Structures are given as structure tokens and as C-alpha cells.
Length: 278
Image (cartoon, rainbow, N blue to C red; front, side):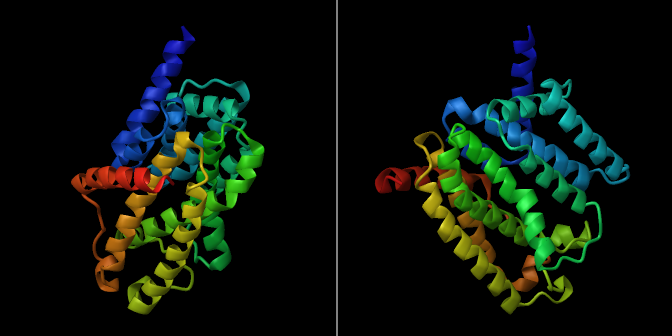
């Protein structure tokens, strides 16, 4: 009978992913069916933690996150949780023997979002490590099916991709982060005086990380390569749109890719993938 609850838990993680991210949902659909539920479980978990720190204003977010953290470790230890999101997450983490230090680092970055932090280069790198790079590493462990040698070989590329995704998110969400949440992640940058030269420098950094990450995508197993490539193509498209947007407009509106454009990207990426045999 427990299988019914396990199935429900994964379905809720899947629905959470679909509700919050069309782009990642499309990318996951392009993965092998054997690993989709596990990636939904990872995304559902990180999305729930992110919601606590970003959306639950008017509530004691510090207490909520602390309780979520305790429940996470309890679920991992006991290998069961009545919270469906935590249930699918713990089952995935335990099945693939994913390093708990990755979870620790992720939760540390979530805690950072509860405080007003003046980000310097060191804190900036630490936040990106926990909020994006380690999430990519959790997924990588699933992609390589626990193969430690392959994991270590692809680890630097997965971290670069996660970092590039997060920095694009920072640019895309700059308006809400700054005007609503009062955050600014880029070190030594005054958002109130965000200039074209500063924007250009950030974009150069992102472009380099995307270039390096693509080499790792080419070396992923067949079961995950196209799905990750599709997510990469979506973010490249978003990044190009951001590059064409002035520094002034970046801080005054959120840059988006329409769902129609996302589906178009999916088709064109598939043909590019088949032709180039990534």
C-alpha cells in the first residue's frame, strides 16, 4: 500500500514543477522516463524551500525554513515523510546516495535569503554554489546513475551550467529582487545605478560559463543529454533577449520567453541535437 503514497508523492513533485516552471518541465520531459520522477523530486524540493524564503511574507519565514530543514534531515534519516514533497525527495536522495553536504549547502543559501546581505565576491560565490551549483550536482548524480568516476569528470561542467543559469535568473529577476525583496546579489554593484558597462561585464562572465558547460552536456549519458541540452537552449535564448535589453529596462521589467517560443525552441533544439549528435 505504501506504493500508492510513493506514487502520489512523485506526482505532487511533478505537479509542483509544472506549476512553477514550464521551461524545466519541458526539459524533464526530454529525459529518459526512468529518471524523470527523481528530477521532479529534486525540483519540487528546492522549489518549496525557495517559496518559503521568497513568497511567505507575513509569516515567520525563519521558523518555517528551520522547521523545513529539521523535517528534511528527519525524512532522510527515517526514510519516510508524511510531506509528499519530502517523501519523494528523501527516496531519491537515499536511492542515489546523494551527498548530504549538497543539501546542507543548498539550505545554507536559502537561509542567506532571509537576511539583508551586502554581497561581496566571496558571499556571491557561496550563494550561487548553494542555490544553483549543488542542485545541478544532485541532478548529475541521477544522470550518471551513481557512477562516481563519471560524476567527478562531469562535476565542473555541471557547476558551470548551474552558475550560468542562476546568473541569468539574477538578471531576469532583477526588478522583483530589488524592488520587492530588497535584494541585490551581484557584488559591488549599485542596482540603483546599474550601467551598461556593468551589465556587459556580467554577461561576459555568463557567456564563458555557458561555453564551458556545453562541453559537459555533450558528455552526458543518452538518458539525460537532450533534456539538459533543451534547458541549456532555453536559457541561451533568454540570455540573448536579456543582452538585447538595456540596463535601464532590465531593472524595470522582468524578461520572459513566451510558452509558444519555448515549444518552438523545443522543436528546433531537437533537430539541432539530432543533426549534431551532441
